[in-house]
Image 1 (cartoon, one colour):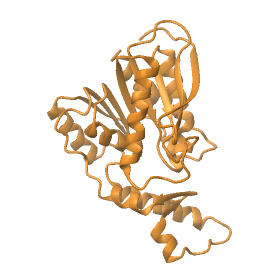
Image 2 (cartoon, one colour; image 1 turned 90 degrees about the vertical axis):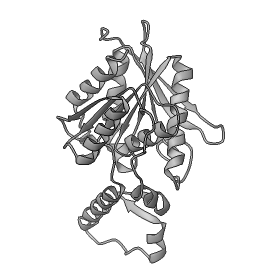
Image 3 (cartoon, one colour; image 1 turned 180 degrees about the vertical axis):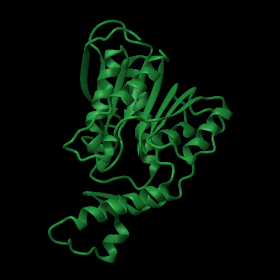
Length: 272
């Protein structure tokens, strides 16, 4: 890897004028940057806020190693435009593709990698199947079973409500049809229904030349995915993480699994 460099951060808006997305471009303050840029896609809902510090630290480490990185907020989240969440995964996939295009144009790098965590890792797989495959993919605990993910959201909200001093007013039938609320975020019902029926894409070509698949506990679904990608010609590393899953912790703890982030930086840096 290159010797550490200082970091420069440029906030920006990109995408359609009527619906701009917010992002932060991270790069070395001096020296020649590497030929690889990295799009960092955050998780969604409450996991976004909890994982923010870890992703900010990852962007910093990439910049210190001479790489450029673009962190961004999906439509309807963070500082991006939109007062509602989309009703289909395709809309968030479009945002991810816009972010890749923006990084390639802004950083003028010939190659782009995509980092996704939780649901954004799922979107990264879907996006790679839809269009141009990135040079490398980092998938951190991807959601590969939408029905199980929905049950996790329901259980988390139930535990939260059970801990309140007074029970919340029961939702009406109409409100229940609108979607599922989890820790202050409303997941639209059509989006959840699509996610519950989402299959891992039937790739006709490698979604990336190199893939790093990280999980806290190695699952059969991810093991099967790794085997499928290897059969297509991707170089796949399927590994267990060592530290905390920051999106699964209280926001005020702000845990950063340093060793896992360094593994990601090493993987991406080895492609430059």
